[in-house]
Image (cartoon, rainbow, N blue to C red; front, side, top):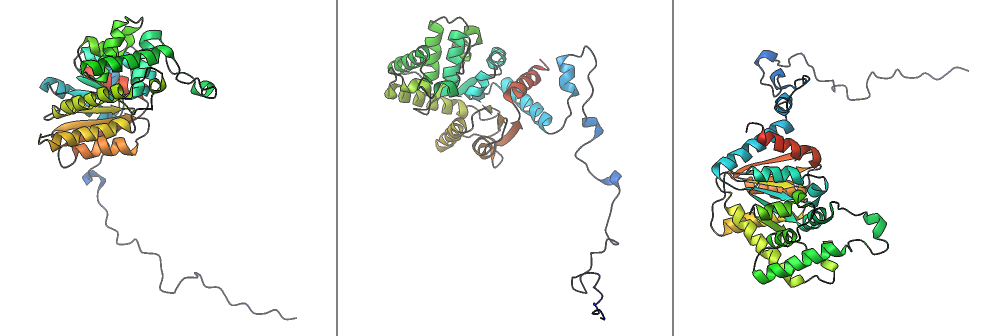
Length: 329
């Protein structure tokens, strides 16, 4: 039986006039003439035995995050020279990663003009001062309803709020005052105690119900609200003073402090105050929407300043920043 004849297949299934684009007439140029972003002069240098911290910092590649870190440090030094605020906005993770001594040292050297914190910082810093440890195991205690029940913590924070409301002062100052009065064993490790003793403004900003002290019997919502609102107004005044060279750092707060900073910025401008030539930076191990938008981009838009985003773990990036700030002292 004769087989059926089979038509020869085309080379391509596409239309006859569809051909790969020719590369014959592509324009090229000499590599020598092209501007480039990376040069060997920017590369890292191996360290020699016995190298100093300054040698280490100078050996880092002058590329991307290192460039940003160096620029932020230079702007902090410039703010210090101009006597403009350098405001450190921090979340509780900064305390839990053991960075209070680094920030306290910078505070003594004049590179921390003010500290703004969320409620978790009050909890963790106070517990460190009183007991030398913090950060309970939530998974182990939540099921029994014991999470957040530490009596000493709730008593201190809520008493401070009541006393602060009575005296018309902010929650940060009131908590620092109450903590120092206890003469806690580990006060040298406490940001609250150091700021109070050095008269560095320390503002505390709450989401009422979000911190463990808020469900203790001693909690008083009116006192918490009054003192944290005083601190918002105090922070706004500090932000107003940033005009002409000030710096705001957001470290480890993804929602509360970025929202707060943005509202302080708009309040300052709403009242007719100029707020330009400012520097903002967000330090975190992921770059979230609110810090990038409300700290890095919006406040510095339209030529009002410059924002930076530095990604990495706080226990690495903040000591590096501190070392870079002090490198040329």
